[in-house]
Length: 254
Image 1 (cartoon, rainbow, N blue to C red):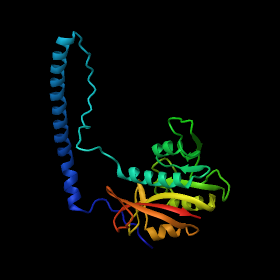
Image 2 (image 1 turned 30 degrees about the horizontal axis):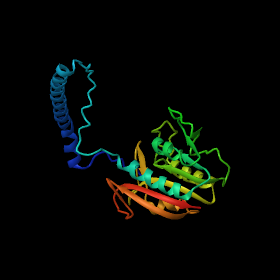
Image 3 (image 1 turned 90 degrees about the vertical axis):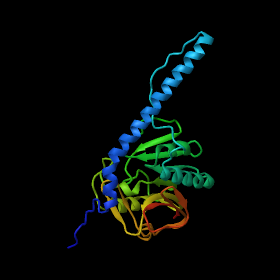
Image 4 (image 1 turned 90 degrees about the horizontal axis):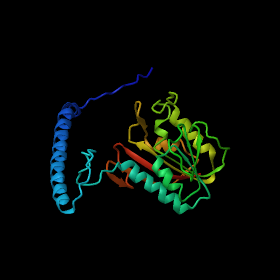
């Protein structure tokens, strides 16, 4: 009988990093607050000098934003790259309508402005938008007939299914069942845009997500042909696959 190996942290470097994290956070916080108070004193001084000439004194309400003075604009690379990749391909394909299953809400909102869009998700959106038709449902039981969908995306979704992270039932076969359901609803000639974590040796990062071996994952979608593929590795977006953990983005046609 096979045993399940559960790995927590096996790298001494990671342990040292975890131990130093609270100290680094305290030092960063002290520096940020010092910058805030220094800026506040200078701003008050400049305001008083201005008011002496203009005879008006503005009211100052403290609303500290202490983490925004960065050297560049922080961006989460996975959604930045994969969402723009899928958006570009879908807009160029010009589908008559598009279905999205559980992708990031900003991507869905923008795509809905250029393509008639229906979004399916377990959880309703907390905000409404006229251009988004929302249907509450599960990727394991999509409310569409067999072979009925021309264009469908599901970005960074499949890897979560069955891990309970978003309140869904636990199921070790959740990702496989999700792939089968997506394959069921796509019509012949239809397009599927998906992304999942990939690495040479597949793992379950409980209860965050799974990672997949690319060949085995695409083998679960054997009815499809790969039209395009790209990868996100850290801050790099590339067409070259690597053996380490990354995000694989796939445009498939049935």
